[in-house]
Length: 489
Image (cartoon, rainbow, N blue to C red):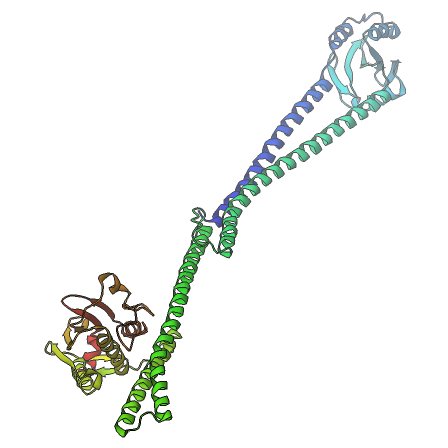
């Protein structure tokens, strides 16, 4: 799962759970409020049981004796006050002025004889009926009088309602604060988990960077989790591996460079010493004959050429390492090229005791290559045979064959060969199979075959060495048939 998706899910859960919590708390609050409100309303609307006795006494009024004062005494014992009106004239009343105001609200309703109506007002029960006595209609109103006055009841009602309002508001505040605290706790819980998800790979990256800073390239992060952080940690591990390889490469290069400087110092010392000796002999007049002077000059010239060849190779290696090696490709026929190269070697004095042989397949196609660079490859290989074959006479064989993918050039000699364990190292920079440096007057510097490998691979080919049937260097150069067909057409 991606961290982006996880953030969306966690935030969604936070909102969803918070909403559910608010809905649940609100529902419980509404239910509780409704319950309390209904109970209060029920209490308010509860009718006193004495109403039934009052109703019974109304019907027991002696219609022959309408002494309303005496009749009102009976209702007073039941907690009711009385008001009697005959048609439109007040006949009797023991109501207070406050209670009289109530009549204005209920006197508008018309009721017939022997009918009754019951009202509830300010916690007082009001019963109204019409009795017909001596052909007169008496409108009788009975008000259940509390011990407290109407004013006291109103004040009490207001206080009670205010207390209820305070309770409701306090409940809202307490529940609201509690809900907010719970939501905040939920938010903190989810945020903490999210921070843990994010900080876990970040902490691993921080620890990994400190390890690299301390030079420890062995331990990798190997994080498995959210996709984005997994990609970052994998990239970090790849970078660490690259840094480790680069460090090892630089260390090996530094060791090789030290060895190269040591070898070059030795290689230069021998010809320089010879040149110095020849010049000193000529200067001091030790050599008196013309023939001996020419011999000394030839030796000095030869050693100077060796020094020049060594410096040229080092310069070539420098260009190779800095990526400034020029390549100019052109069409060439490898078979004709090998024949010309062998003929050029036969004219050189160094190869006067060397025998050359060349075999090839028929119908060798042209290829695209840098001729000057291929000459350098061949020169490095044949010079290697001349230096290390350690046989007399030296025999160098060239062979050429062509496959669908490559033209294969094999250059072999009849020398002592190379140990099997060292074959794979021959093309490493600054490597010398013979490290004693005492078998020849001219020693190699471990660059020739390395440069040859670089040039061959720059042509898209490959190069390797074998010991059987004789020591051989095998070069594979791409045939590039499409290019050859276009050239031939």
